[in-house]
Image (cartoon, rainbow, N blue to C red; front, side, top):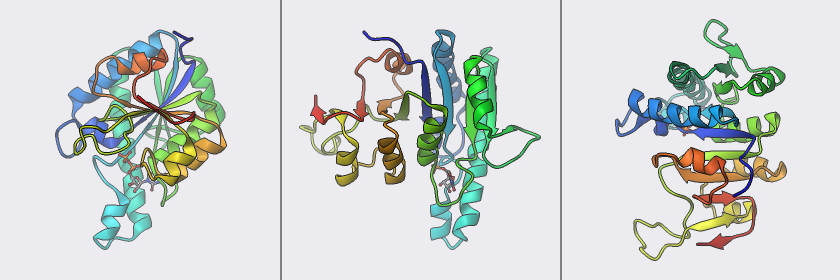
Length: 242
Ligand code: UDP
């Protein structure tokens, strides 16, 4: 087994915090995620987190129902801050030091996003949670994850999902479906594999940031991923099916 990752960026979708609720935040699920993050932080890996907001609000959906798109996106970004604060609370209860930094200033509740300060927090062993996406409408928190990973020089993006990787066809429909162990960026883009949106993939490609897609619901998976165990699918290398 190789050396554990030194600095990672974990992308948590809003849905990951929702559990089976259908809407909002399941505190029990967030506590479980926090416990896993606490383990890797305590063993020395620096962790930055980008949280989504899809469990609360999505601009695209609101705009389909007639709302101005940019306004909907601002609401979506604010929703991510609720998730960020919840995660912060769960981590701090486990005695992990954290800072929330938001891309839309709300200084009464969180620090503004300042890249150099974020890096300093990480170096001190604090978990930095990035809220409010990129601060710009028409973007996603996946793209934010790629952007922040490049900015803070993260070695890898961990994209936590409900499936154990990327398949060549839908494993629920096709029992012969094969899971890719590795994929390259161009393949993901040309085959429209929907690992992350294309802006995020393009940014990772340009900056050579690998993306690991793995199942967050399996206990211990974050730790395994940090140790470089081959769970899930890694985007960044050559295509290989398992
Ligand atoms: N959003 C945005 N700009 C960003 C990031 C997010 O406008 O840089 C808005 C957008 O409306 C999006 C919502 O915030 O639908 C929630 O983020 P996302 O859908 O990426 O969350 P996830 O799918 O990860 O839960």
